Length: 372
Ligand code: NAD
Image (cartoon, rainbow, N blue to C red; front, side):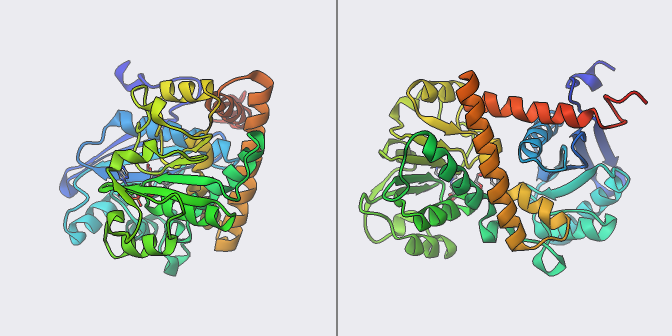
């Protein structure tokens, strides 16, 4: 009994459901953490080595991300124990079995995550009538194609720069991970006059202090090439992106890339966390102590989930971008105001604002906090 409730605290989880369907070879866990703000939105992750704890922790992160973004949605996440590279027909069968099993979990709206994509969300929608991150043909807004998360990152930077008196025109930018998030962040920053001086992928870093050509880089990646295929500039190892001096440093690849052991190498004024948990807590503290402003992941990379929430209501791409801009700007303002008022780290300030929103929302609900 205690084991089943080991994650329980004042916020959730509301439901932690283990699903087993031997005939479909399906093992899955759905964590619906908190529905104070509304039905939980969160991705479906498929991997052989997922766990109940991972599902819960990711669901909790979604509770904060959705609340911080001011969306009428709580946080959830599900994991399916399977190899995502299985044959497409087998994957469809498995995902459809999963969808049927979560049909009555009306408080949970699934979206794509590692190992699942928009086609998989189409199958789930077909089975149970709800999912986000759908193919365009059935009302989806392709968030990676339009660069929803990179766009939101730049809205955040555009507000935060006033806090540190930074001009975007001519500001040097370094992007670690030139993928869906990184390349669009670079594009939107370039529109404001910033200059991309270095970018990296798994195979290396390319550096040019005079500015890299975004179109050339984007075509290189779209054709399956590496950034090292860029015809000019200096070519360094993948890890070297940390050492390039800049005003804006954007991690958009993996977790924990900046830690106590390498944080001293970073020479920048602003870090906008495109990736999830790219800096350890120690690294964020060390950066704050040096006067580097770190914009925390769950505030600045919420563009994707805001886009999903707009899609869920049948909204358009233009409406999604407008809402991302509005929400993220307002959140960064509120977070920086709290930082000024309390002297707290940006992440702590943002978490306290998000938790307060969840608590206030819970008071309106019958499932918990109410008197019924
Ligand atoms: P992606 O796969 O499109 O791009 C990731 C890029 O990072 C690739 O170019 C890859 O080569 C590069 N990379 C991987 N490891 C690297 C390393 N060690 N050094 C340098 N480059 C490396 O992924 P994405 O969708 O852009 O997501 C990037 C990160 O942002 C992930 O942490 C993801 O969880 C997070 N995120 C994405 C979204 C979204 O909307 N796509 C939203 C929120 C958070």
